[in-house]
Image (cartoon, rainbow, N blue to C red):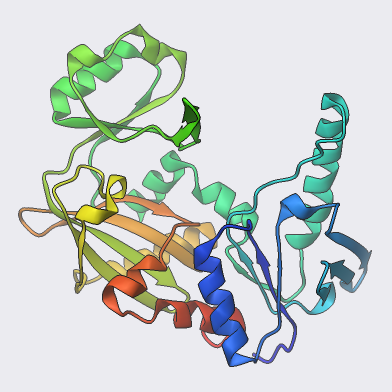
Length: 317
């Protein structure tokens, strides 16, 4: 497909993965790039969009670039910081944030002929762990038994029946403890660990896979990269210094399941996590529609940055 328009990149200022992709696109010189963060709006980011019977026209302007909204080639939606209005009152901030979300956000989600990597609405859908697990089961992946509950008795019964069991947060908001950023970790759970505080909100409990390794599978358009991760960690993301990487071949039929999963959510990119058990079986754990991936190229030599640039240039669809 021929589309001479720009690549829009929506992310925060501190995003090394995006930096690598943009450097690749700049080196190629074939696709102009307009990078911005929703946190820049409206101080240094502005737009004027007209909606007509023929679609959206208009411009989006940053301090150094102007993009024609009617001719955007692709939009790489990573991890924007979100709208902020520190000069407004609490009530006015709520109003202004809502207008920005449904105004600028609505325009960016409706660009004609644009390839989204991924579409922000589809990202939102896919970030719900229950939805992801249900779709994964429907696509034929092997899943460990999982319980999502607010009932302590149900949680204790599940742990007794399916132990060993781990607790996973349904989402991972950041906390600060003594000024240090931290998050809730995956952890083993025993029946005696469960008390009435479970009733305070939703919790996810899952049978722990007796694994020998993990696998990160990264799908970038029509390219799929399989990386085995060896460690002695329950959650390999807690200590990257203890990891060993190798390129691995997938089980027969897995790629078909990967694309079936992405199709159900309308995604063209996904970072899948699997656990391999002692019998060599691959167990689906989750798919992150905005997951990190670029560090794996450094560890394995896989051409992942080039694959993402190809996708954003619309060389692979």
